[in-house]
Image (cartoon, rainbow, N blue to C red; front, side):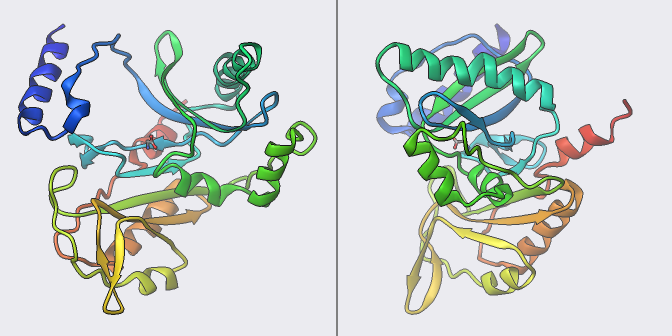
Length: 273
Ligand code: GLY
């Protein structure tokens, strides 16, 4: 109860200048689900559910999961907290049931289904559904897709996922880190020059631009979450090192980013079992 009051107080303080716009006019109080939050996405053709490898997003702005919530400051995939057995349970109990339910209600769903799942002591529970890829989860899930994305989308549309399920790379891990503008998720400056993208790409990293624009032939910031740097390596440890090299290469004034994306998973993997 104390935590609920604290959250409400935090919201009221943060929202005093209408930081959330119209969305801040209603407060919804829900059951508090405690545990690790993971993103479990799937392709579905309305009947067959083909899960993607589980990912985890880092929503807080600052290292150590401190500071305000954001759209996501980084993600990694696969999330080792979700074992093969647990993913099967999430597939059957959440994703397949949802898709079947929509079919039965006469509103069949085709496309990408994203379940935000809390791994509670009582088992996996749904926090939210989205009908899209996640951002920044997409930047770590799709690089692990072995099949051709176009063909997967075609099978999804043609109702053929059962016959041609997507294949995923084994023994590869991806970490992506968001570089955000100073002030994000509040107000931030735009038009700040971004340097070093080509240097990061030369290190074998993927750089996905989101809040950028071209001005006089130069890349400048134009949004809160400016870009993400993705490293795909054999292990999460190696991927984190790779992403850090990209962060060192890319520079813009006031850049905010976390260097601990994936470290909870790395700690999980290092626990004795
Ligand atoms: N990363 C959270 C989302 O895409 O909803």
